[in-house]
Structure formats: C-alpha cells, structure tokens
Image 1 (spheres, rainbow, N blue to C red):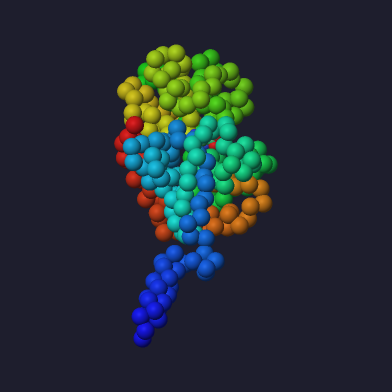
Image 2: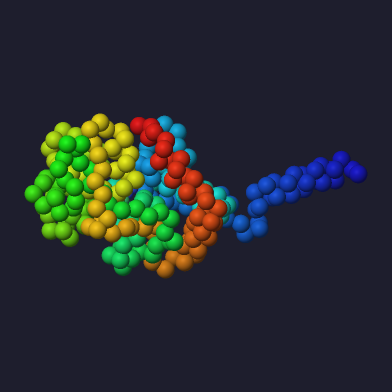
Length: 257
Ligand code: ARG
C-alpha cells in the first residue's frame, strides 16, 4: 500500500470507529437532551444538594428523569423554577416535560397530558407533637398552612377552611415549628422528611378526608412522541422494581441540605 492510501485507510477506520461509538448517521437521537422542569423544594422527590444525579439536583424524580433520558439515548437537563410556573413553562415550550411529584389531577389534564403514574401519595397533616388535631375536621378552628399551587391547597380550599399559603414547604414548616400556625397540609412522603428533619412534629393521617393522589410526568397536550418514550421507560422501571428501590433509597437517606 502506498503511504497516501495507508493514511486514507487509517482515517476511514477511525471515522468508522467514531461513528459506531456515537451512532452518527444512524438516525439515533443520542446526545439530544430532554429538558425537564421541576421545583426542587420537594424532598425526597427533588431537592438541591452538593452533588446530585443531575447536576446539583437529586431525589426520586431526578433519578427517574435521568433513566428516561438514558433509555432513549438522550441526556436529561433540569430547569428549576417555582411550582406554579411549571405548567406555563411546559405550554410555552420552555421545557419538554414536568417531573415534580406532580399529581395528575383532572384540572391539570385539561391543559397537559400525563404519563403512566409512578407513585401514589396522599395529603397528610403535620402538627406539633402536643396538638389535639386528630382528623381533618379538627382543622376547622386552627391556623392552616399550605404550599401555593400544591394539591394540598386545593384540598383545604374544598373543605372551606381559610389558610395561609407559602412558596416553599420549608417555610410553612418553620411557621409550624415557631407556633405561628397549627397545621401544615402537604404530601405524605415530603411530610415524612420534614418531620424527620425537625424536632417536635408528628404526622396525622385522615384517609377519609384526603383521597389518594398519583404522581405522573406532564408533557404538552398531544406530544405523543415524548409521552411514548417516557411511558416505555416508566413501565420498565415499575416492572423491574427500580422505582420502588429509588423510593426506599431516597426515603431512608437523610436529605443533604
Ligand atoms: N403533589 C402535589 C401537587 O401536585 C405537590 C407537588 C409539589 N412538587 C414540587 N416539586 N414542589 O400539587
């Protein structure tokens, strides 16, 4: 072989190898990103930490998002914003999907499509250990704290009680700890975290008053291409037990602040 031919052959071999590695030209979407929106104020589902599974973001949802992207040869990007802004950002196309411990409610279904549910939760009441609140009806004459835009706010509203709404769960819990409110209504697993992180609090459940809720990933209405990808991945993670494992892992693990 002449020197020039040898060089050409070597170059070709390299290009072929590079193509195999990156699957270039094969129509694969590897390297493309799915941009998820979240509100990283909701342990154990999403919170900010020194080194999370997606940048500084960690939690059950973050691990799920990462896996969904990986299953589809893509990377997961995370945009952190206020919970209230998530569905608007989704409709604007600023993000591709919302993963935020978001309950698939009929009201939200009017504007977005939801994936297969991946987690079942319920609203609970966090109270101080010496509280006489034993059921939802006992909140009637108490100072109630909720988080703005969460399903817990809707529940308390539907019960006809007045309440104060905070932007973050931690803010509402601080009010409770400081005696400025009597009860915080919030999702079960997150309540568990807050009770573990703060002295003198306990959880009161009332399954008769609070219906169970299902967390799902939201996409733009009609975005079946992305929804199919997400659902395939979720179905697999439910079937092989990995979502269960993540739930156990992040529920037991102390949330790094
Ligand atoms: N499950 C509740 C809801 O959908 C609360 C979700 C809060 N999530 C969050 N990432 N801050 O309204």
